[in-house]
Amino acid sequence: MSIEEIENEIIEEFEFFGDDWEPKYEHLIDLGKSLPKIKEEEKTDEKIIKGCQSRVWLNSEKQGDKIVFTADSDAIITKGMVALMIRVLSGQNAKDIIEAKLDFVDKIGLKEHLSPTRANGLVSMINRMKMDALRLAGND
Image (cartoon, rainbow, N blue to C red; front, side):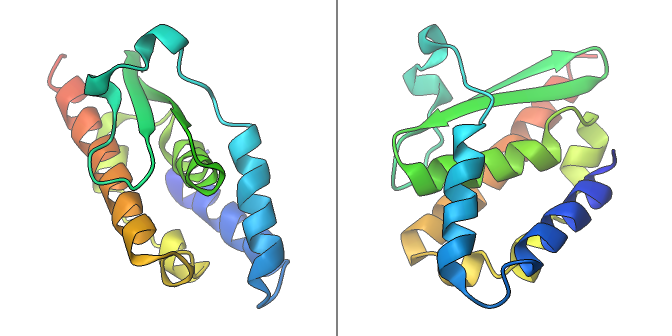
C-alpha cells in the first residue's frame, strides 16, 4: 500500500468517531498496543527522539529497498502517535518517506488536539523518521 492509501485509511478510521475526541484518543491508545516494538537492547540514548516530552525510542533499518521502523515509548498517547507514524511510513522506500506530506495529521485533527509539547514531539518524530530514511538511502 502507498503512503497516501494508508493515510486515507487512517482518515476514514478517525472520521468514524465523528467530532468526539474521547473515542479517538482511545483508538490512538489501542494503536499503541499494536506498535512494532523496538528490541530492549536497542533502547539506547542514541535511539531516543529528541524533542519529545516522553521518552520515545526509534529504530530504523533498511530491509531490501524498504525502511522498517520499530519503536517504544513510556507514555500511552505517545506510543499511539508513533504507532500511527510507523503504520504510515514503515515498509516504504526512502524516497517516498522523505517526500511524504503526511496531510492526514491535520485532516484527522491530531495536532490541534495535542498539548503544545506533544505536538512538538510529533513534529520531532516525523523529522527523525525522514532523516533516518535519508541516512539509510545514502547507504546504497
